[in-house]
Length: 326
Length: 299
Image (cartoon, rainbow over all chains, first blue to last red; front, side, top):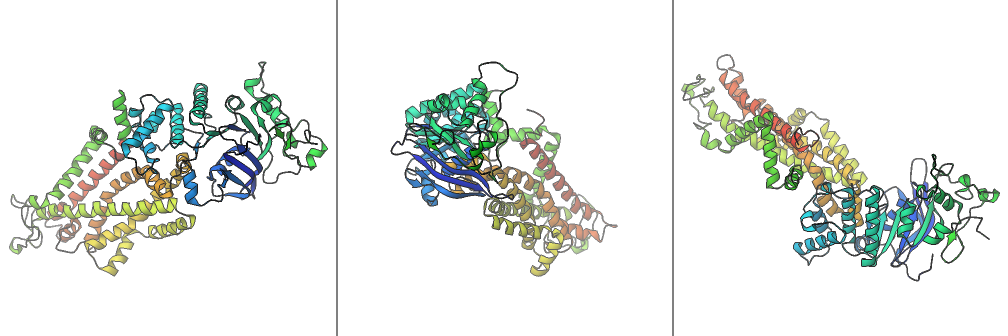
């Protein structure tokens, strides 16, 4: 990625294990990722590739059985994984915020939306309730909730899925954070809602001038919204580059296969959709060599014994494959 | 349904609902025949308890030996007991003790169960394990055995009875709250709150608490008659309220020896127990049906 001097978020060499009865699952292995200021970075990968682990690590919200084996998550130069609880709380919500996958469960069902939105402004001690309420209503208006003053008194179940996701985005943006992390924010929504949310995120980036880390398995959305793309496979970054690089000049066989399999990009109608043969590898005992070798159509002997490293191809474009290596 | 009615509907299902929600809740309960019966009986007991001192015809403690074990007359509708005390007056006064124990002991147990349950559910794993062990230990005692042990140690009194009930019921409520807490704790909105920088205490009080109190209120309201029965039972055995205080259990005990000659005393002590139990149980069931949208028959 373009070494834009001063990224908002910079994940360095991050490795995370999950402790399970079968042994440690190597969920992330030596992941590097930068989110430049004002940029939108997309993380794509199939289910189980470590997308969610990556962003939970970025917010330090990992579940109890996760273990950081190495690396750092630098937010504005400070390591999120090692700072004390007080500084961490100062960061969360203020400077980095998150939108979750399922808007049906990411709002408290027994509190009205207004209560929740006023409540999370607890850090502003010198402002009164009416002011906080006004701010909440303003925010709802900005994300396109009609009649926000009245709607503040409604409970989450009185909103549709798309509206709830807008509310979740509004809550995340209340403090105008530098970085918004979105974990598949449209997966639970239908296509029209999806388009509206993407449109909203784009507008918001313009208005708030923040950065967005956008996680999705929907390639179309990523192409639509993002500037940079990181392709994650089985806990490793296999390729990264600008949207143009990834979608028009993919170099890693996995990225190529992923693009071929995207139903939205098929130009002929077929009865059977193309798939990548094989399964995601066992992350308790990862095989030596390239993590994708088993499923790769272009694998050769070297792939099974020697793991490739991320090799720069062009400006910001890099892939982890022996075929692009020296 | 209009949007406003829909709002009220939504709030009706929540604890701490506004006035409109309360009215709606009441209407629902009254529409259900069993609910109406339960509400009437429970209100009867509560009103009797509140105005007991004004309703009694005689001093419930006044002894009138020449007039002992009298049959019902207009002057003594339920007759008199072995010391010539007016049974009806004692029954009316007894409702005060029953309500005092039933409501305050349940409320205290609820409070204790709520705090310990939240602590066990949201606190660290080791604390959860210790608390669970404690709950199970208490829970494994039959409450009467527990009562016998405690009363032998502390001596029979109203306070001891309440202590026994609170100690016996805290684990029940705590387990309920702990389980709901564990469920809520892992939901996405708690993660979302954490991602916005909320402290653990704020999450516990503002987000978990409102999600777990609903079922607790329903269970506790249905336990009130059980608690009243326990108090009556202990008093009957001579382990509860000290004589001459007119607990329903004591009245039953007084009448028990004379059941062949004057059954009025036993009827006088037993009937209010039945009325209270049925009333609060019906009311609790109606409340549960109303608050649980899945059981609601009408929209």
